[in-house]
Image (cartoon, rainbow, N blue to C red; front, side, top):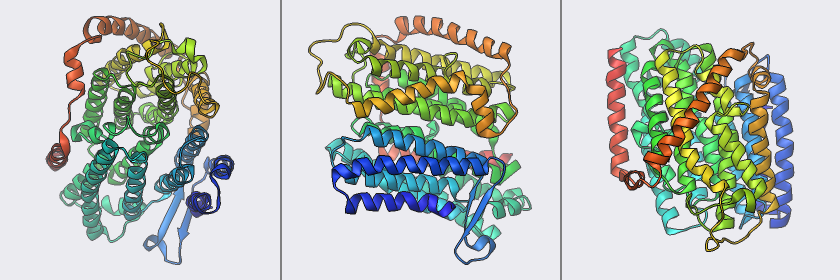
Length: 529
């Protein structure tokens, strides 16, 4: 069944574009996606205790295309299909819906293909196809800023992926195949000096795709976020960037003991810290959310690189947590812009009074991302910071504090009186946009209240939550809120310098230079290990 997990979304995309009217396409897209969720859940049920391996074509062993689905892969496919359903419902009244959903379903097929494939070259091909589709979606409204930002995004991705391509080419020269299992076996028998160059090349390309801060890869992405459709940036933040993190995990496992886990642990900490700092400097609600995508990626990388069983589990669950609360926040941000006609966080007020359901969904997502007790983020952050060195736990606390400060500013939109001069196209939210937003907000709560059982069920683990440990982290959260309020009121609110820092841009050459510098540093680090 694995090839059909990729083929079906492609067939749906073509069918919707060629054979349907816009009205029919809207209904069919939602129906097909509901069916696809059922198929994804069936795959999850099958792979909870056994791996599925499919050889595509008549080639033998590692020379053909091999698709593999284990428990982790099926969990992420289920997450992907769920978020794409939410986006399909949200986009019911989107202009030019056939083209829009054609691109969305192609992107879904690419993402699922990346989860399933175990071939280094297929990863390259699918990433490049995904880059083209994402660029088209980012430029969907054809504004001048979107067109320019989309092309910069596209060219930088081409540059970064050449590092990956050269790396896998060198690795092929060493082992003679692209299959991950085959490469992993032979890498263990190679001299470390032979692995330095391919590892540095491959991980530089993947680090760019993960939006790790030292590469400045976040700038061309977040600069084009505000004007792009909210449904598109919700997918990019909630799902697409996690695919790159997933591939990053796979390649770290392939290189085994040679992988520079401590280096990437430091990079993850830097990513989280700089991400929250840049978010505090923004006033555009989409830019705030975009930079918090970077900070949350930093947390995920910290969890996956810290080395403990609990931290890795927390990093995996934080991928799901982030998919829930960040998709909610981007979808509700689209509603707020439509209703108020502005994305300025200081001009939007009284959401709870004007759009109560949107306000409730936003509040649930804010509580989720800040790690408030009984919300989904508290569970993933609990596991990330459990059984890890003190400096790692301290880093998570500081990143969470920065998140709290930023979302104190963001939460100001929920209360107060709205400015009568700030009025958008509609006072009430579109029902099609409201339903998935509220549903995802509810998921942010349920994923926290039932977090322990959900983690054990999804990842087939016996990990449990220690009540005293969770209570301790709850007290730290409330202390962070108190400290965050003081810092926001006296250092962040109305700070002109922070606003100037938030508008920084290194440009195309600067990003290219950062890629080269990162590659050089990683080359030196791995060469010295």
